[in-house]
Length: 282
Picture 1 (cartoon, rainbow, N blue to C red):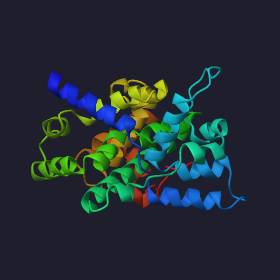
Picture 2: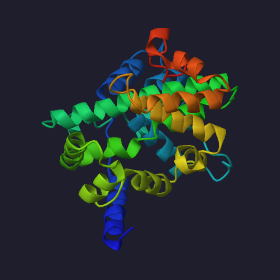
Picture 3: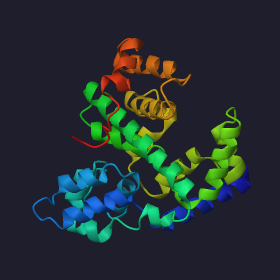
Picture 4: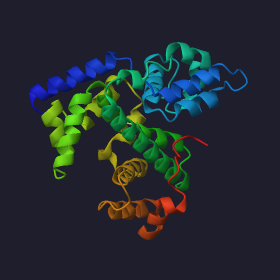
């Protein structure tokens, strides 16, 4: 990476490290309602409210990592476990569900719409990853779900903090579909979103397991391949089920689950009832 681009990447990481990351309005409403209802206020219910919000999920994990006790030897990647360690009341005080994404992007309607598209895509990816991890008898399926949910976190953050540049990238790619995302991002932002993601995970001292699961270069590992395939399927099917890349996704999913590609296609087909949002733990 050219030195100038590297400086831009470092500056962006430093900015995002100091920023108070906003959360989704719906998440804040759910958490406020739980806090007002003593009968429903529990670590599990609060975890369910947090689990569909990538921004609040990473805020919680980042806080816990940066304030972990010396006696804590293992890293925490599960939301309910994090809440049990921190305490529900301490969560509301230390990692409050504020500010709001909708306020941060006030007057930037198109950028807000695009951000919500990415969040929805992440929900679908998390749902796929969760479902496949269960089928693969992965006892730590929640870790895989969170890795898929947060896989495109850097893209979400840039829609919030650099909406003008992200809209330009979106317009350029819409005009010329042959443009590679990495090249356009580096042209407009001075760095690519994958590099930003890796640097943020390191700078925020997020769990090493999360870094590994979110790193596409580790796709030889079954759990990482699960995350990568879930993200790809959610991305390729975002604008319809006729995308040219989907047959390759079905082949790869079939190999992962050890089933024929035709069965993999049926498994994820919306006609088979799999289009629901599986991203929240059941």
